[in-house]
Image 1: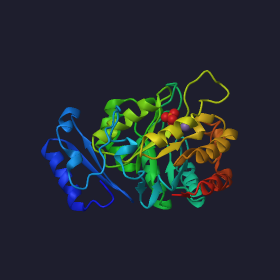
Image 2 (image 1 turned 60 degrees about the horizontal axis):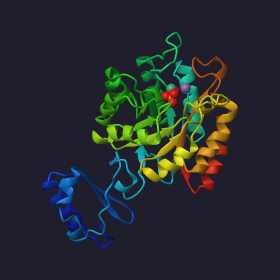
Image 3 (image 1 turned 180 degrees about the vertical axis):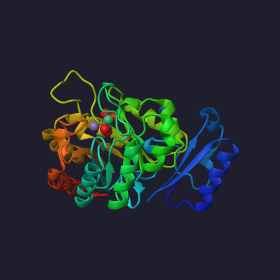
Length: 334
Ligand code: PEP
Ligand code: MN
């Protein structure tokens, strides 16, 4: 809609679209209002949309994803949970252990993350492990510990959902539901969280293209949940000097292609703690909307990802270093 369009004119366009059986979603931004019209292309072409009062421009989206496309929102999306924000000018600093292991480990880490000004607490209850003989997570017991950590620190909880059979328990405990790299294209799980009332943190798969990631996000949005954070966490390449190759170019591309916030996981990409800070700084500098990083009171004793977790004793310094780049980018920790 043009800058002078009235709310009545917007309502009028929405009514005409809906009458014709087209799904209309209104996004009111700082400067413009965008009406996303999702429906059959030929049907849409029969409507004289360009002639409706207040309409400035009709932009066809010729992409396999629509709801998550940049064009569909007036402004970049900000995901807000309990006053914590990720997206646009808010950089999300999400941190915590790879896995929830004990009550002390979880609470101690949560206190450190909160004291350093972290945005949310991460911690795995159900762990997608490459070997079936390694620690698989404490499951439901871990969800209880995460709830306790939230009650004490106020930090919203990010935790992974692996199995649709646990959707009720995870959705209840989590403030943000993580879909891990290995489930990035598990379309049934994506549709399941698309019907959940909580935001979703969707990781890019180990060999998923940017376009495939956006289509995965579209599965979530199509079910009605458009509170999605995308996450670049490194991909499989021929390179072995890092655990996965962090694709910072993808972050820059995603920021053009979608209105959703895009964060980076430097921990799983690096695979070793000494590389986490430089990758985190680079993420902030390339324009990411946040990072999700692993920290543990005794990383060398961690039951998963021991080599890459930052000691909690170093977390405040880490947060300050990342915060400096965030400030340079004109953003603040959300
Ligand atoms: C994790 O965040 O602990 C995790 C398993 O990440 P990914 O799915 O990216 O491997
Ligand atoms: Mn991990």
